[in-house]
Amino acid sequence: MDFTAQFTTQLAQFNPDPALEAWLLAQFSQSQKEAAKVPQMAAEIKFKDIKINALTFELATMKRLKFGAKTEAYSIDQRELFAECIDADLSAMQAELEQLTPSAPRAKAKPTGRKALPADLPRIEHRHEPESCNCGQCGNALVQISEDISEQLDVEPARFFVHRHIRPQYACRACETVTAAAIPPAIIDGGLAAPGLHAWVVIQKYLDHLPLYRIEQISARHGAGISRSTLADWIGRIGVALQPLVDRLIELLKERSVLHADETPVQQLDPGKGKTKRAYLWAYRSNSLDEGPPIVVFEFQPGRSGSHARTFLTDWRGHLMVDDYSGYKALFGHGIVELACLAHARRKFFDLHAANQHPTAADALDRIAELYHIESTAKDYTVEQRAQCRQEQALPRLEAMHAWLLLTRQKTADGSSLAKAIDYSLKRWPAIMRYAASGNLPIDNNPIENAIRPIAIGKKNWLFAGSERAGKRAAAIQSLLATAKANDIEPLAWLKETLEKLPTCKNNRIDELLPLRAKSVIC
Image (tube, rainbow, N blue to C red; front, side, top):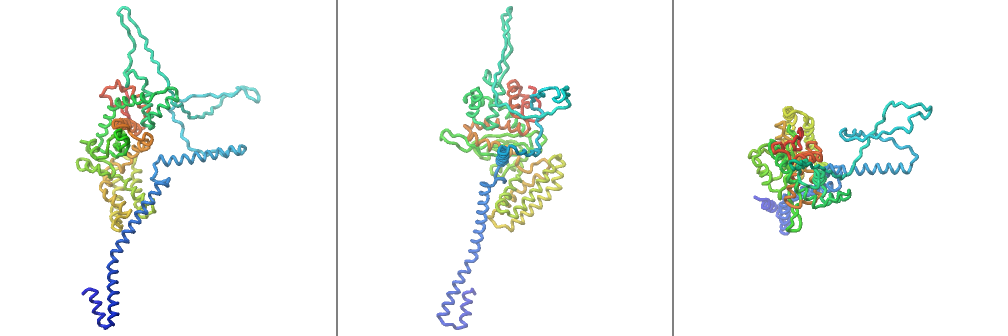
């Protein structure tokens, strides 16, 4: 018997007035209808609470991205920009105070811990002798007892000069022949520029991210006046000359068993439509824990399709560290093993904690911090020592964190920001903790992100690639320069030497020209 029939039966036992009975039955029916709405209202309230929390989190994140100056919202370069402005302002205020109170004793400068100037920089000595070598008191000759030596760093701006090559011609009257020193091969035969100028232009464009019109202005300001069309001609020819080095760099990269991969969008000019379109610079890097020298390779592609990564990594087998982009998924299971980035998982909890100081997010950050501390401790270990350290210290913490994530997720409302952060980690957990089973697998994808960062900053200057060919040329040259930087090799000096030796270097000795550590160039 339902509640309405039961209530009617009980009410009839009291034999109430018909009007009262009808009113009571109406009230009871209304209350039943209201009670039936309670579960639906509870569900709506729960949904609204989750939506409010999600929106609050998103709003706090956007505010932090806009106004926060000391969070992951800003890159290291941006944070240093704020810091250097503050330092400059403090120095300016100190100087103004000294001007206003010239008689006041100048505050003694605090020790700055400044490093000594590099010993390999050229030195120009200036000897400063007293006005007289006789004592100003008694007139006797002074005797040197020591020297006070101080050093100042100076710079000479771009200085254009001319190499004048004179080759005397000698004739043999008997043979009626003429002999002169041969003209050595060059990247551009009979060209206006020496290898040093070619290297400088490439570095200005691809490392310092200056468009050619600015390089043209710099040359004009220093009295050389190199036209933009000439600069463009040099860039095109140098790109072709350097391509064999890039091809060999790619071959060496694919010999490694562990790689990082990532991609960043760039704009490419679309002449047919009079505007730009989105292209992508795909980046690949060797593992920092490998014994070999680091290698960085960029590849320009017109889109973000995963087919580009599959084509580049054709026949390659090993461990690949990537983010959660779906384009990489087709690679796995065919001889390529996925490694997931712990830094990406951490970022989800960091954003949540930065938005509202979420205690569960703080707990997750503490657990991840312990894992990174273990990596820092084992940084200089051998592969075997690092593997043992990870097995004994990292693996138990990873297993404990996985159990904690599963338990916490059961208590967390679906759709909440915390649920999304936990789901991201749980979804990729086998790939996240895979590094702990070895001593040579990376914990995150930060090395490739660090390699991409200069590109992300530089493209604000050059704005877009003028064509697909220009994008591929930029990617090739950037590969060489990024590899040089990763190997602590000064790019300008390396490129100048390479452009000098490349025309006469044999193919079987091209490895000697690559910007890799522990090499000697003897072409």
